[in-house]
Amino acid sequence: MTVFTTTPPRSLDDPGFGDFFLRLVGDGDEYGAVDVVSGLLNDGVSPQRIMTDLIARTQARVGELWAANEWTIAREHAATAISERALAAVAARCTVRPTRGRITIACVDGEWHALPVRILAEMLRLDGWRVDFLGASVPGQHLVTHLHQTGPDAVALSCMIPARLPRAHAAVTACRSAGVPVIAGGRGFGPDGRWAQTLGADAWAADAEGAVSRLAENWPPRMGDPWVSSFLGDDEYTYVVRHRGDLIGTALSRLADVYPETERYDQRQHDATAEDLGHIVDFLAASLYVADDRLFTDFVDWTAAVLEARGVPASALGAGLRLICRQLRDYPTATAYLDAALVRIK
Ligand code: B12
Image 1 (cartoon, protein in one colour):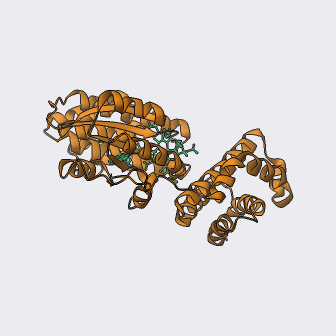
Image 2 (cartoon, protein in one colour):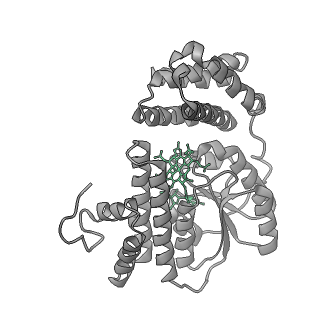
Image 3 (tube, protein in one colour):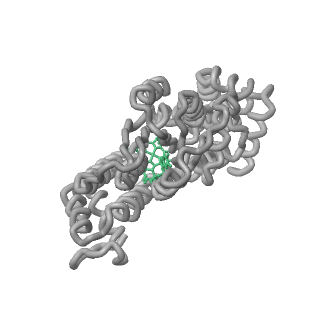
């Protein structure tokens, strides 16, 4: 990171401006961060550019620093709170009268990444949409009640973690059954939005700018039968979901036999291991749900890197995967997905 001993950079185009802002959010300097975005607005920089090129990019770097174990979870939380404050400061300075339709924006049930979709909400407001922003983790039935009460022209559904895709599917199906077309987004739907289509979403966009363009043209889309893609998940998916607790509990009870280091684990390490095993089962289930092993192997690659940055060797992850795999001997697709992941971490 660049260290500024002299005058801080002034323009968003200056090399080092991103580092400068990252340092403010990383140091917990809320007033400094708000001053920076206010200064940019005063200089005539568009609010859209501040949101996408500064705040969103900074958050991506916050994520990299957390994943690399350079920043603690607390520092990431504090930085995110400051980014939210800076975003609110930008939004407070821009008032646009709605000229387009009405849109409901929500994160799927169990999805706590509200900031990405808050950026989307502000970008759509600036483009003339009347936005109902419902925020993080909206249970499907409450979302549908809201649709009946407000009658929007679209629902924008966010899913940042692929493990939430089965719940995203329930929400997509419910919204479409209520006659409201769905635009899906967030990295949980896959790098090219491939799983948005699997789940029957009417549209997908990679980011807020893409969503603004997609919704500005050719909306509403022609909606097919909402029930066509409403049944996903087979007996393997159902088995893994129903036996989640047993799969994790049995793996934990046998872990010390195959990975003796865990005998020296303190309570915090045990809790983290149980949480990691939970993620393995949840991502495996989601992978079975969309019938795509890439969802699971991408997750295992990511987990291996995160654990390695914390000094946990790939063999520990391998031990966990094998213990889950042994319990799923009678389930050929699940076993094949686990094997595909095991090959990668050897
Ligand atoms: C802040 C943060 C959190 C905060 C969220 C707080 C908040 N108020 O948002 C908290 C602490 C809650 C959190 C929790 C977790 N997080 Co987190 N988090 C992040 C972080 C650092 C920043 C998120 C952010 O604001 N990004 C900035 C925005 C702008 O990013 P963006 O993706 O470019 O956003 C655009 C698109 O996604 C798109 N978009 C989003 N939604 C929608 C919807 C529609 C309809 C459309 C069209 C477009 C769209 O438009 C956005 C704007 O352009 C990211 C890192 C990252 N790269 O994003 C990790 C990250 C997303 N988190 C991650 C993880 C793993 C988790 C946890 C599982 C950690 C854990 N072990 O508990 C939990 C899961 C919680 C849950 N169930 O939801 C991983 C996901 C990796 C993966 N395998 O998918 C990431 C990528 C970190 C990393 N580098 O590995 N997290």
